[in-house]
Image (cartoon, rainbow, N blue to C red):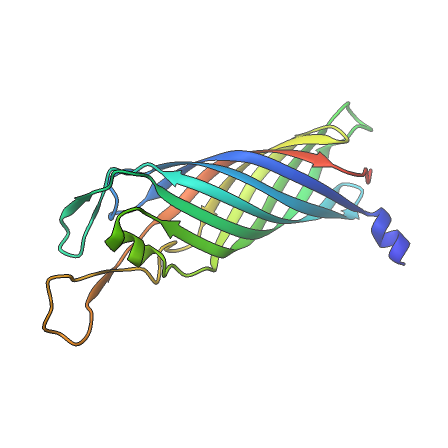
Length: 206
């Protein structure tokens, strides 16, 4: 049984880039470019489909010139905001074309994932203090396609996070020095992005 499972399991490494749109009323700009690396395994389900598990790290650089503080006043930022994510993703991968019919693979993919680490950093002291409390677990969905050969494939995907990526982060009211409790306004940002990954597969399953 172990030999059967091993023969139907495919391991790979991937690396790529992403282009994000960040929708937020708290930042003046919304674009980010990212780089990612990771590992994956695919278990054959049928001759036309498999199930993929990916574990990867991605860094995004959000180029924003300013953010809005507790009083909704624009505060200038001189450096980009860094977004570090470690994610676990599960995908259903359906083979539209295979080398038996053509000279290459073409697949359609869909799945769900979650970040297990979600860290935002800034050189601005007040913003950095707020960002470091971002919740780590953020769900997202994935739609995409891949094309390639036995050892190398390219995947083009659309990724969309559910809800607020910055839930748990609060800009504090620095003007209220009389209250024993700190007032705060929660930051908000939703992310959607396209990614392009190059995958190297160690063993062939089809």
